[in-house]
Length: 369
Image (cartoon, rainbow, N blue to C red):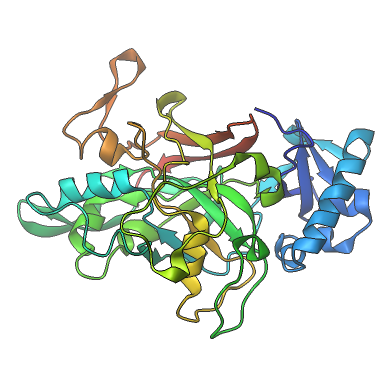
């Protein structure tokens, strides 16, 4: 897993007593871009001003970074900096793009029915989340409270089924006007990041009919401090899986935007699953097309995520790994888990087929208040 010149993910960092600014990770260092490139767009506390410049500027900056990276100048050891939320999140949308995950959830939540709703194979199902609760990796996550069904009656209290959702996130750089549809995926999306869209399953299962997720999802979404540019992922691009029925014309793929990478989920340092992303039924270009087909505008800093990544016999949530708590997973020392306990630390990482690391996203569960 490398952070060499093939990768060059962007983030926002600060040194003690100094303001946050944009950097690029190289090995175990951060390259201070404002100092190295002499460009004030990188002296900002978010990536948004740079991302808004578009593909030509992204490519030019990447080439300049490649030239500056080997010199060793303006590099700061990673262990000396604080990493911040890399983008000012404009809007957040979460999709439901894994056929295996959607099928598993349907079997658990709607036994006796068809696991997939009739619309699922025709469009990428999604919901609007809370931009204000997107946090950077390392931010503790407080166990949420809400209504959950107990013995057939709603009660209020802390979630007893707090879960992880291992996802890929896509960050918008170039906006669209209200009433427009997005153009080519690569003309709008700057890069990718790792996402843990924490879920309170008991709150979610009681509230989600008929309008979908709300309090069971809105309390926290963690993302990696590193945004890997699309330019770094060319060798990871593959065709998405065959789709049946054939999607409507606006959803038909024009280019291979499935990504051949594998996520890894750890609970308290122990691996529990390694789902592949390339098997996701709906690809990110299709998500973007559907997100804007009604004329909804894109804004710089919009974040949309894939939904739980499950496939190839690997599952991206404890809900699936334990089959809603019926089959606990075993950790070392005789410990077991159905869902997350207070104090647990969840870490999600990912690596491409070619060995590029996408960093990691981590968070520790704090008790409810």
